[in-house]
Image (cartoon, rainbow, N blue to C red; front, side, top):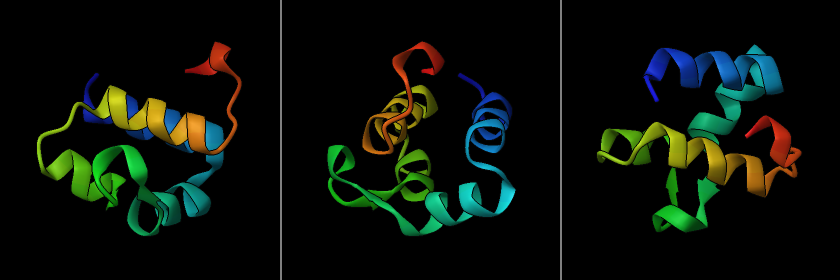
Length: 64
């Protein structure tokens, strides 16, 4: 998944303000307590970060 697609999905699902806050403030257990921004910067696939966020925020699987 490209970063542009990742950002589009975040904006569509959570909105700009909430999505930005989630990316920068919420830590993901699946990535050792890194935020989404830190996980992507560390080389993790944005699709896996997206799936982790979806799981933690109860997004229906049909939108993963």
